[in-house]
Image 1 (cartoon, rainbow over the protein chains, first blue to last red):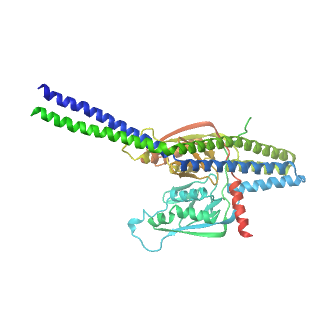
Image 2 (cartoon, helix red, strand yellow):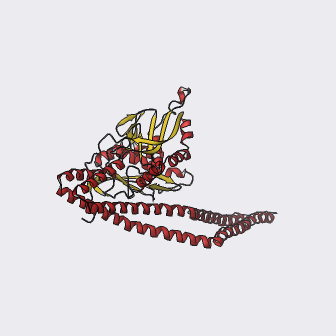
Image 3 (tube, each protein chain N blue to C red):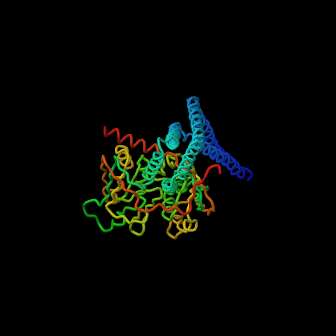
Length: 237
Length: 249
């Protein structure tokens, strides 16, 4: 009797130890895997991004310094007003309130020729996300200005599904979608190809075509930039 | 007979036990040994990279301040011109508005703060993807805010402008090509009620985030919110202009 009781007891003790060891082992394996994941290539990428940021600010500083110099040392009174007008025009172009032209890419999304079954129709819609994704990738690849069906992307543009239709700001757009982009055509094209948009749109029965152009015109935003709630923030006051 | 049975059990259990100990020791050894052998130099490299990143970031902070000062001097100079000439007055007013709209000057006003964070609760079995904030979640919220009339938005101190992109590169999110980490604090200037209502609308963004993900969302109305300026409006433009010229000649 005494001996039969001892067996389960010993086994329990040993099992507990083994269980504990397993847990410790698993835990140590897990943490070391996480620690290793932040590797050198990741850090190099981080460094590269930080240096780019640095460069952007430096360029801005030198440009604004130059502007300040031109304001304060005008050849005559009329010149400084002209400088101011030019600066206004530059910002308007940047913000989308004036049209821009240059080298770039023209992207068209349209129905694929050929018939497809009715049951596919809900799968074959282009959604706001799709267009937002494309626009985001293009800007991320250095695009300067973008329009979709002649509606310019501005600092406050939204692309949104309203029912079945896509609205860019408050205006409805419909297939075919034509996206005009200004930027380095090679870079933009390879960014589009790299992200696999062609294959993606094939699934929803759409054809996406890219055309590199020497002259792309992106029109000005045709609405008005409303400012009601924000005020400039003076630093140090 | 009974004694023999115990022995068989014990032998089996102890054998396994012994195997586990030896395996465990060897495993830990191979794990800690091999990296540390060659990681002496690797570790040094990492250290150097880390130092470089930090020093760059410190410089950036200083430069940002410097940029801010130059911009302020520029607008002071423009103000003087505006006071002198009636014609400059009109240009000045437009310049101020367009700069605010394009995100080139810091602004303040009422609005809301939306905070998106990875779920703090992370069960082992579930899909980890549902518990972390993805760049498209941020894009959805931003898009909805703009559509509801937000005038200006910044994400973790990065002001959004025309050519801002919110992208994912590996495990990190880049806003304006600057790395950011959760929690993602989205500050938006606009009528707070309207912005909140738009986000909370049935079938809207918040509902779909709740349905499809487990990320944590916090909303807060703000009487006063401050957004920084975007830096870098010149570089891209210069690059493209230079590129265009190069090709022509």
